[in-house]
Image: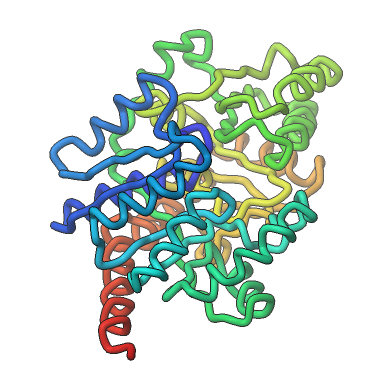
Length: 375
């Protein structure tokens, strides 16, 4: 449950929150909770008064961890277990004990079984999948992050998979105050900027986004570039690239931002941009849309239905093509506003957490009903 790890943590935090608000009894079991005191406080504040039981087993030794997971499941005796992600050992421990206890479980892949994701560290994942295939087979329902992953999982693992998109609290972005962000970064006040939010990891291709930004600046775009996110090994390379391109004075790194500061960054930006190597869902893209900002991305961001709805600007994955799109929106305020309003409306109809939680609840009920009638 590290907030800086991105989408899965946000999904678990908000899904549990809204399930509890619906009157369900919810417990969240993880290896480790947030590492930083301010992150832990934010999680506690979000869940305050909801009655969510939060349990961590990471402090246990490796040999004790499986036993600790079994003890928690036995004590809670849940009607259903919702497993998130694929590669953590806690996933395996929970699934195996659920099968032993005949407790139905469902599994959200969070894009980790998409063919692109599986191609990374291929050998290590292939070895693990020899064990994991039985975990997939035992899941009463499998939730893929998008249709492309769902189709692939069905073919490779020979079992059906439905699509369950992540959710978002749209009202948080509608009420966000740019002043919270600009108070921390006053040098950006009065200066429009392109925003990126996410882990500074090679898969996010911030280097390619930076090259596109440099191209747009050469064409006359006046916006700066603000890169928000914790460093996962890519920052030094991007900083060196900005110096090479001569744009270091126009590019700003904030590190990870959370809570109101992150919301404020979305509220303050002019354009949100994401040019990834692969993005199974793109929760930060959805956040940009929820903030009513024009969003520029590529087909590598797998956000089903967004292009058809006219919610975002999907452009060629080249330095020039992406940079031209940034320049076009930056020099056409009316087009940017229209795109932002359309994107926010689409997100509100598709990804609001209340509607997502209702869909999950209906799925749970079907799974539990099947389990009760199984021989």
